[in-house]
Amino acid sequence: MHYLVLLLILSITFGDQLGVSHVVPKMVSFLPDLLSALALLYVVAVGARQRFQYVRSSYWLAFGVVTVVIVCGAFANNEAPGPLFAGLRYYFRAMPLFFLPAVYDFSEVQIRQQMRLLLFVGFVQLPFAIHQRMIVMDANRYSGDSVVGTLVQSSPMSMYLICAVCVLTGFTLRHRISKTAYFILFFYLLAATTINETKGTLILLPFALLTSALVGAAPGRRVRIFFVTVVLFAGFVAAFAPIYDYVQRKNPYYVSIEDFFTNKKVMTKYVDTHATVGAVKLAGRVDSIKVPLEQLSRDPVQLVFGLGIGNASHSSLGPQFVGAYFALFEGFLVSSLSIFLLEIGLLGVAMVFLLYWLIFRDSLAVAQTDRGFMGAIAVGWAGITVLMTIAMPYITSHIYPSLSYLFWYMSGLIAATRMRLAFAAIPAVASPLEMAPASAGVAIGHMASAAGAQRLR
Image 1: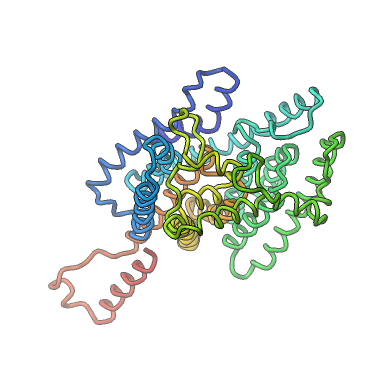
Image 2: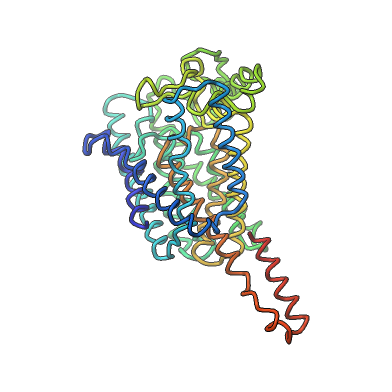
């Protein structure tokens, strides 16, 4: 399974770019689906024998409700098989990777190798981004949308690099890499985000970075770490703004970073375009949430269960897989939150937020309990979970393999680690004859240990 994960990482971070460049057949883009199917077979076969003991019941509840939402949404809207299949693929193709660490105990050596590969992927984004920016400038174009590194689109690249910085923050706070190495890697990894026009980096980065910093800081040093993190982010902004302004200097539609965040008219145009149902023009971030809610609220069933999974989305599999409501809401499919609202309704969205909350709590538990390698990763993963949550109105993160597969695999790793720590904390149960001579204090101690382990679970 370790080599399957390594191959998956390579395929989701390099496969699409190699396919677009015609280096490999475009069919390689379906390799992650195949690897996920193999992982599913392993999870079902091994997990059934283990009774999925390292999966918390809260996750089964959340996934169970999501299943009910999907079934009810499909029946209530008479959804065709094509869009249903396409929706299931996008929503659940990464789920076997979430359960894989619960049934396969990856060693620390294997996880280290996976982390090194992920860092390598982050390391190569800057050379690719610089080359792509030079092509854009040589062609007298201005948009940074084609400055994507190896991740096909610019927003996923920026989010990937923010995630890498969060994990490195955890390693630094747990004294696993030096501060000098951290500062160098911090600015190197984030340098690519300064030339691809993802202004959202300046919104997403501080939330993720501060969360990781505060979770990983020792109780007596949190104020100091908070101010150091703020200064570090301010240094990044000081570098981001002039570089962004320089590469956009010849753009006739250029808006400076300062104007974007301080000019009310510019910001309003970005978040609210007054788009109406049926419009092809992309809606603003506020429109993409407000208008679908207004339309769904006309039918209580659709408001709760949505229009059906995949029933408002486009599909690259063919016209028979395109959702029945795609033409109506095409301009509003600008973020995961807007798509989730349309396709799985308020109940489905609530379950997505619940899953993120469970993952965040597991990250906190592992970060507090484990002082080793996984604890350092959990520090970073707390920030990444916050990042994925606040990015829901910003990007369609669930459709990008480089984000969805890695997020659910690493989240499963954190969740399984918490359960393994809980089981390890429960002492072996002695027989009544063995416990008879024991003092009351020892017996109470065993009971307290077991209760503490139950709280950890």
